[in-house]
Image (cartoon, rainbow, N blue to C red; front, side, top):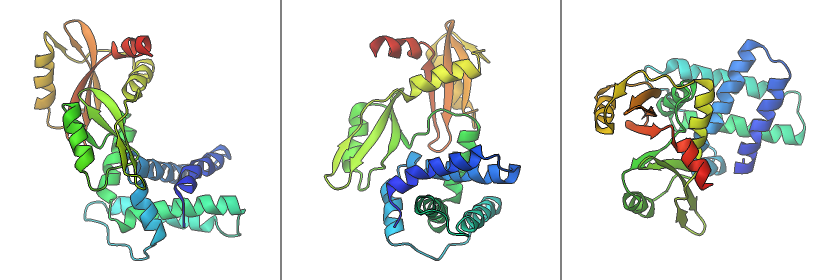
Length: 257
């Protein structure tokens, strides 16, 4: 059985293979494996994966129509990592390879091609930190958490324009929503790699919000100006949510740290 620790440690194995100077094809395979591992955690499926690994299933459903390319990529990645088991690697390497293989098979067997495809596109677009839900108020979020039969863990949600972790311990049933700095860190990084240049200007936040929600499929992120101040217009395709984050959040978060 693959443990969650094995799943997390598999990143190290991918990093070692990456540093060895792989071919372009192998790089793409390693990137896909890395993103599949991240997908499982970002979508809060650690316990679901753990159950899958404990009761490992062999039958894989046919991929949904229109996503054949992605299913073939997963099958190709599966064959690549199976080959790495011959000749037998060290016990530590074998555990990490098996973790990657089970992660690939988990996505395929649970027929999550579409969800993975959405996640991959979000990552490739350098969108904001992935979240599984959004709420207007803490009360709404707390009600969702306490009434959820199987809360996602680990995962992120939005409460207003603030990012929170979802914490659920299955053994004790402890459930919490601590704040995190993910939006702050994302804005700080984005400011460096994509210097803010507003693509649109608005007199009020209400006007900017109306404009953002009128877009059927906006970019995952774009800079806008509201009353002269810079904001990031963010879009979360997996939940259809849109948000406006003031660039001043960076300074505000640093001041309160």
